[in-house]
Amino acid sequence: MDQDAFRKTYRDSSECFCIFETSILSHRCGCSLADRFCIAEREGIECRSDAAQALCSDFLETLREKARFVLKIHHGTGPLAHSKALRLQVGGLRGLHALLHPGDPLPLLIRDIHKTVTACRDRFGDLEEIPYQEVIKQIAAFQDRKRTHPRRGPSNDD
Image 1 (cartoon, one colour):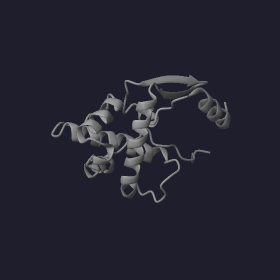
Image 2 (image 1 turned 45 degrees about the horizontal axis):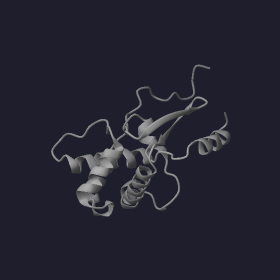
Image 3 (image 1 turned 90 degrees about the horizontal axis):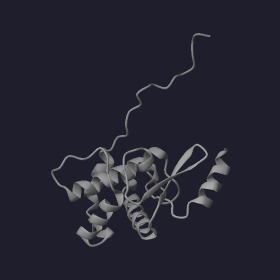
Image 4 (image 1 turned 30 degrees about the horizontal axis):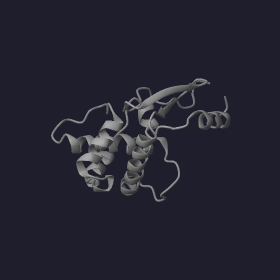
């Protein structure tokens, strides 16, 4: 399936796409409201709640604006590169976890995105009231897994 056909089929089949799809598909996060689906050999994530999707969208939009400097993005809109999207999503959720559980070690897997974002919103009263300077520290510190196999360059055997 070519990329354009996949994107069209994906948009047509997913009524409520998951805002944190990148982090769930990378096995760094999970969510109690996420449903997986497949199109050809590719996988997608759909959210079961419009209200939860809106909350996650608002959080990620606010987080992206606050993390522009650390992510070195100069434009406010448009898609992020995969590595920056993963850093923003996983680092941001780890930052929320650190706010909710100070002193606890950061988990390798954020088990429930919806529960984490909702708990932080409830604790601070509003998404804008979250102390984002603490969350940004986790975005800055986040490093994705290193490759286990180096990329192969051109062979000199020929």
